[in-house]
View 1 (cartoon, rainbow, N blue to C red):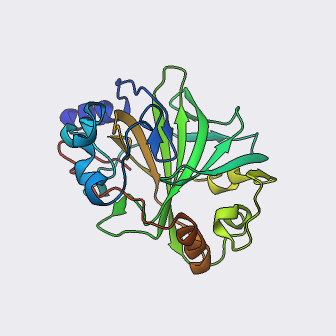
View 2: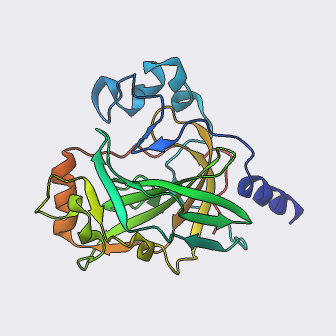
Length: 253
């Protein structure tokens, strides 16, 4: 039991700093080197494209992973505080559809505050649960005052039409030209959610920096088939990195 507790402590409180902000599937500073999700610039070659991307090939704590073999633990409560959700700036980064948010929104974990910087979408999902992919996954990217990243992932499953998601232009057929979106309370996507998986991982795109705290919510969100298709049609390609080896890590729930 003592060994298990030591492992839990090591997973819950990584001390590695992540330099650069996970941005729309890309980290700041990586835009100078072209990378892609297929072909000679695809995931299997990311580590060869630039020295700064070497962790994509050599890292031992890479994301995404298959959430399997999970260890039960008393995980800390997630405190979402997103008061400034009224306005978004939507943009296509070339790798994902990204929603830039107003400052002042935070999630608190074990007394540490992480500010929400943006959220973006992947289709199909990057993480799997017991080998199962989901149609989509959204990543809420947070950063604390030390530069450490915490990413909250929500899995989407096909079901009823989601009225909140429908407010985002990328999920509906009629899209305006104005990137400014007002009146979207995305706080509703995370409010009341406490059951989650936790592990220590990385950015899922170059430079694949490690030391990222990953929280993936256990309960998927329902969206309709046409909402999923509108997003896929807009982006025009799949943007999920293949599953990475879990190696010596543990996943907690």
